[in-house]
Length: 217
Length: 286
Image (cartoon, rainbow over all chains, first blue to last red; front, side, top):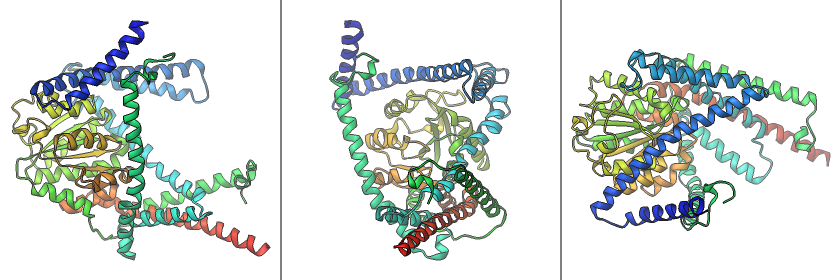
């Protein structure tokens, strides 16, 4: 129990306390400590990439085994991962430890002509869904909906240069809506989130919040 | 009245009508966007004050100053952020500033590499001497804190595997504390990380560029002065292209974007005309 519960809590408390105190110590040793600790964190962060990859492949392997509807798409995850990892490691024959693949490499070719167009397409088709959703859901049935609709319409129109052909005031009103009412709402949300984050950090530091330790703690 | 509004499940005929309407919207939008790309028409171009601030900040830097460009996006946001990045790189190269390019998005490295290399070639700039491409390193907040102590400590080698120590493009840039300017182009929330752990902590001026959906979230930081300026979406990129005097992808993209916005506004008006007509019909009944 001591190794599974008390020791991790102690490590979190000491690490948190050192990180907190470091902020208030102007000695060069504190700065050096920060450099060392952040380098450690980055090394640990590198392993998170492998865990992420493992988690993704594990999930899709499960889908292929269970064969739910659309399981065939999971095959593409393995094909894509194998091709990209394989060509990346091959590195035009230079091996994985040489400098990164150059302009004419297979890796770069697949990235430029497969990943880039696919990624851009996914983001671009959002415009079609937004247009359809705008037609089906943006209905002015209450006063609040009317206000939201008017604000959205002005911002949408004011954000494109064609509005200048109608009146320069559209972009000015659009800027006003973004810089004041939008800002007020966003700031409120931001303050709420920040206060919540501080409270949560203190809870973790003092061992009240233990969900990060896994189930049962 | 649609079944959804009555709280009952839609009938088969209603579902068919909905699907037909949706497909018609997709088709009309595609036709409108393609037509706007093919048919040239001139749009007025007046850069926003937020884009102008970024431009004037870079204009005011002495030649040879280092400008950190954090390209935190991948191909999904290429349409909006690539033209922005290229315009910023062109401005830096034209002014003989030294762009130091890095990313927190591993999936974007190859895209950023191409952007940097092609733009540098336009101006005859040499890697290591006139600019540095650091590529990707994991760590987010910790990487920024690490760079705040030592840039060459955080990135001991550049993307091409050359030691950063002694690189002419990094001369005088020991850590983020001595950085002249930074711009974060983000498709996620890395701008907020740069504000909290970079600009605020190490005291360098920071500006941002982002996709249009993120821009509203960043306005509080503009008013507080934590961000110097903001390039929002494709419009922000077009503004910067105009300021630099190199109209490109973003400027051309203003035509289809204008038409798409007008199309969506038209759809909203049409949908509300239906609501208004239903409202009038209901009133007449009473």
